[in-house]
Length: 254
Ligand code: ADP
Ligand code: MG
Image 1 (cartoon, rainbow, N blue to C red):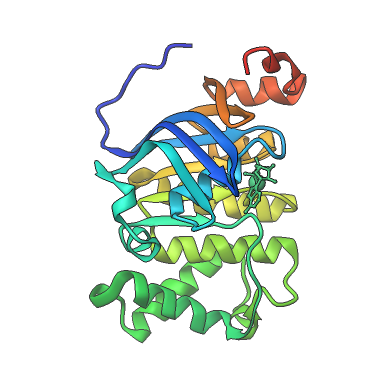
Image 2 (cartoon, helix red, strand yellow):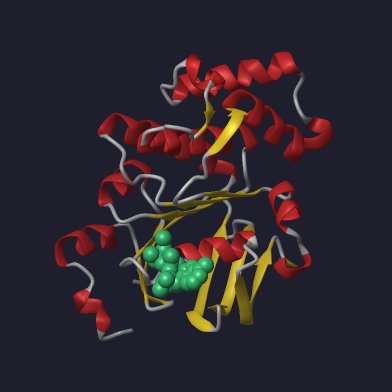
């Protein structure tokens, strides 16, 4: 399929990226460009390197870029520390969100908004208003705020918290790593609504195994990753094709 290039602003450009972890090459020549307003879905079997890509974009220290480049709004990413990437509008929703016993959700969210927005952080009153409206969007009860971050949370609650944090931080580039796994249909709908509400002004990379999320967020592009490379890209129809045929038919291209 030939996709017509748009004039939208380029947010992320990954060029012929190679990444190693502990001496093993995991990403083997991957390129992708994400523009403002675009949702890109990244699919592929476990172990193909999807999380590695998300982690390396965010700046995880365990991953070494051995060649290739990543640019964010035209700036080489290696110049930015993780916290600077975050302040510059990058957001990663973890595949496995960490538990932080002793830190209440409300405090965590307020501090993260202050850390990212700095001088532009809302007053306590405005923050509460924003928080309330996003929690309503996501169907989250107020009692959530007093609980410790992810402590004893169900899979769905953890993923809702990731999306709540994303809505508060309002990122320019959202990397969502299997944010839909383990969600029931109501939670999935809420998470999809959260994603859709930021995409007009952001670029979004959605890593998923399931077409059911992609029916609710409608990606502009679907990419299939096998063994550290994107072996096929297409429109949202490709997700349906994968659901039907699996990944075997693409192995030859890998
Ligand atoms: P996916 O998200 O597509 O399932 P990952 O990026 O998590 O794939 O993993 C790709 C490969 O890289 C796997 O073989 C995994 O074991 C390896 N890998 C990823 N992160 C690390 C790490 N921190 N240390 C060692 N190996 C890793
Ligand atoms: Mg993964």
